[in-house]
Length: 58
Image (tube, rainbow, N blue to C red; front, side, top):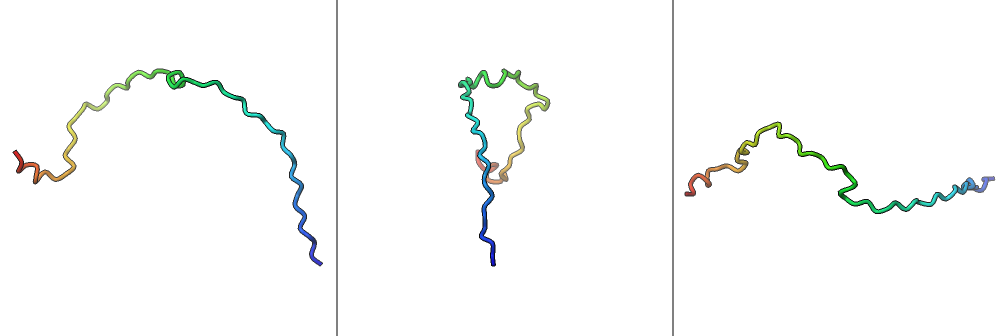
């Protein structure tokens, strides 16, 4: 004789209402950060595409 499956009674958890947070301005969300100093000087990037057709152009 097979025992009928009896699901475990689910314990009701107390409902925690979400506290409505006041709208935060995007600027006030993060403190103003100073610009980072340029560690590496700006150097021209090497051309990614092969420059064989570009050299032929005037």
